[in-house]
Image (cartoon, rainbow, N blue to C red; front, side, top):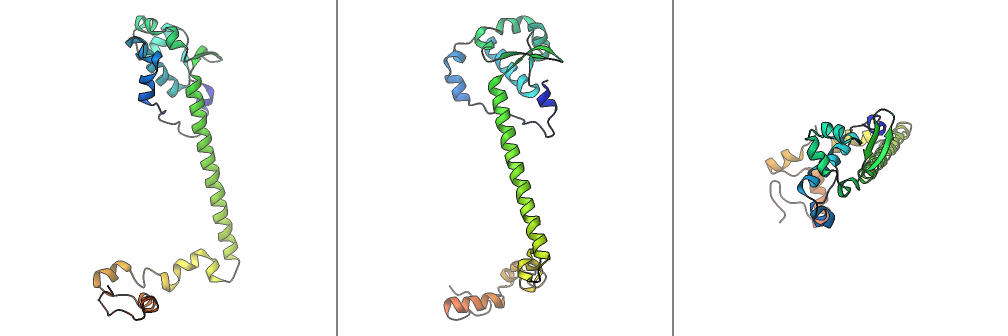
Length: 190
């Protein structure tokens, strides 16, 4: 496990995106033996979850839960070209998958950008609330709008209006301005 994955303060992304059509269309993958395909995919999954894999084939087989002879047979240049060796202070010589690492970094950047935007938005909302509480104009305070009688859910419910067939007075006034005359109670203007 690499240090950068262990030290994250949020849950790691659960999946990486892989386009099956692109993978299957890749001539190098298509020409790989089944054991190479299986070892490659298992190594990629392990790298996604833990960041690194052991470079030693026997240790790698243990980590992957596969037979050592199968892993050894699958560790061809075709498979190993997807990985780079690196020294890890805790684990010694390991392999990393640069493409998956770059993808994880992209997801982390997107997450941080969304989190920063959320924090900025919350700060703006809180600033508006603080500014609204210091003024005497009731329309500048968002909380006063929702509690005014015109918008109160206690005074009138639109669902009750639709169920009973009645139209609230404010809607009648709007309709009279719009159509020239208010509709009859319980009726429709259509």
